[in-house]
Image (cartoon, rainbow, N blue to C red; front, top):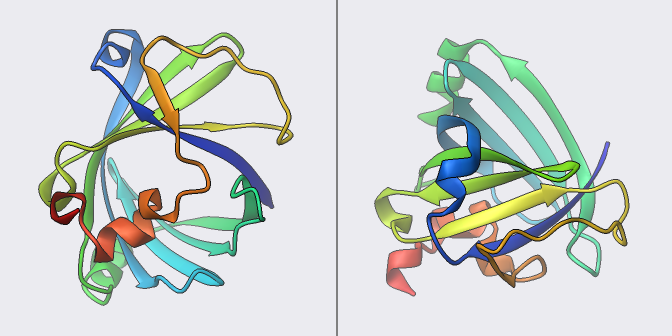
Amino acid sequence: MIEIERKFLVTSNAFKTDAFSQNKIAQGYLSSVPERTVRVRIKGDKGFITVKGISSDSGMSRFEWEKEIPIDEAENLLKLCEKGIIDKIRFNVKIGNHTFEVDEFHGENEGLIIAEIELNSENEVFERPNWLGEEVTNDKRYYNSYLSNHPFKNW
């Protein structure tokens, strides 16, 4: 239940030509407190509820629990969420032995594109595509829970 993940800014739309899938995502937060973030997500035609713990000092590791829920329940829970529903399209791009999840944000966070990669260890080596920019793993401004309350367009 420990997620190890690194985040990067994306420097171009070149990733789109290599994407093998994409999904529209709407997500909100029942709690955006860093010690216990509770997220509701609709991804395509599926609903999910996720609980995340506080990040490690490196920002790469944290507890994560996720469960699929009926889409109608997710839609109703989104109505209870804090202000600032995240609207994005997620592209999945396979590079070497890893899959990058590249989120292109819309609405209040228009113009922001972030790539995430899940790893088996914090020191795992991975292939870096040419569209991968600055690492922002430990920059809390790029957490979706932060973006929901502090939109990118207001930075």
